[in-house]
Picture (cartoon, rainbow, N blue to C red):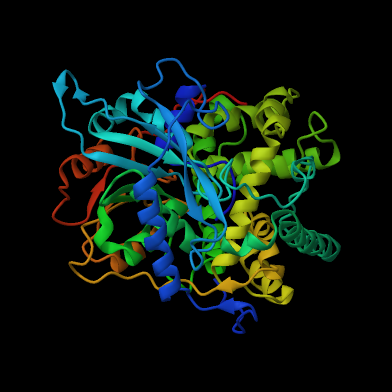
Length: 538
């Protein structure tokens, strides 16, 4: 999964309110079997019992974790929960995960509502923090849920102040401008290979010998310790994007401890997909989503004057990229920053008007909107570097990756011929995994037997590029009794708690009553963004 600033509809709304080829057949020499032995199981039990006894000592929230906003939920508090770094040795080194909690309001439109416990949320990544989820109850779409549930967010291991990981100096991580060639030269490839090797070495050097323990299996175990620390006998959980993957691991590992679970924008849990093939599939899906963006811009050529066909819009984009390669806008926005800005438009169509307006202004002589939109923010460089480090560590640790550059070169060269928009950029993001210094695991084969797990609600948009829809179908097959609600013809990444009332009604009904539709269901797509409106550039 590409590490960009993405989140589910729930998180997006909170933030808005606040301001093809096979894998190398030779497995890595460091690949290790799924550590499901008695030691890890016993360690999880020990850690959960310890957490249940000690609970969480709450205090005021650090603004760096949960920003202070008007009308913050009454009783909003933050604290930490202690988890083992290595579950095989629960009495060894421990790390502290930060947690936020807003108590259930107990009132829905003047009607008293009984409390149903804690709802734990993870926005994905890997590398994203869910600390701000405790603020979601301030939004109208979440008020019914906030009436019945304590809203609990947390920063998974490695993220934020939860034993933070780092792989390089944030000043180096955020360097700009950068290039983004869709047909990279051999010299450019050699340079990027050298950078990937250096980055992998930096992860080991800056994060130490515990690096291997930052993985999805431990994220799932941490979730069970958090459940116990919250005083919950069974877990009610909502995960988005990557959060759906380790949510599904939790469901497979601890099925009797699941109360209710919503998996929004499910990623493909097939062990053969984790994570090399998933990233190839993602790059292919982004080409289709980029076509959606160009089609919308072309249909509004009277506003943006970027071309009245998708092909002409592509020409305008290419012209801008070439011009930025010669002279970066504001000295900081090159083709790489332009590509990243439009990549985020592939995640959320609410970004389309602002991106189109900025591109239009730039091509007509005004670079300021594009600079505001796409230039790196020095103030967020440390957080961005931390998120990238966690993303890399988790995905590299989780599974074997091809260790020969020739395999990566072959697969991405083939794919880029038909999907040039994101293929190489995604490859460079993940290439450190080819040279990863820590042992890799073999992914858990996620499956649950009929009746072993309470029904799980899956939410997916049919044209989601970051989590291609095939992954939702695979998750539906593997979690026996799960039900899938699809937003047809839509492509937003994460749809629960967003503007689609049909989706939200299914989610609310499930979380509040436990009811699911009798069979997989679908919702009509939300309205397209209105040109000239929506988020402003920057």
